[in-house]
Length: 199
Image (cartoon, rainbow, N blue to C red):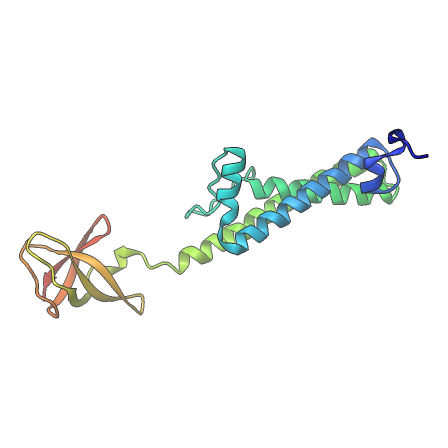
């Protein structure tokens, strides 16, 4: 008859029970790999990962910041470190590399993966940023009034910026109204509103 004492969860998950260091490497690889995969899938679904982990752990993540600066202690960086630390350390141990070598190799591989993950996310952020049209590019551009600009109020104008037609909120420079269809030139930007004058 099998008793509860015969049940070994570690052996069930990781196979034959090995050294403590082996279990640490295996657990690190498993936890880091599962969380990294889960996080990546949620990001593919549409940035759900940020909100989910903020809600679960009460920690604010700013993974989609516009500057794209790499901080080594980002959540995805730590997950990549854990995964590669565990995998390379376990591989070195299994290759009869010794405990010290395994820890060293695991540490180097983990740091390299953390750095690499940061660079990949930095590339994603730069691609995202380069596709955005900065409103400052609109200054000096000419266009037409799309939705009448009332006296002292906001209307809408259509201008070509970066090779694409865009519609922006706009106010007239002199405070006078500008009718739909009139031609305008952008002279300034205040907040997200263009300041325009008649041409």
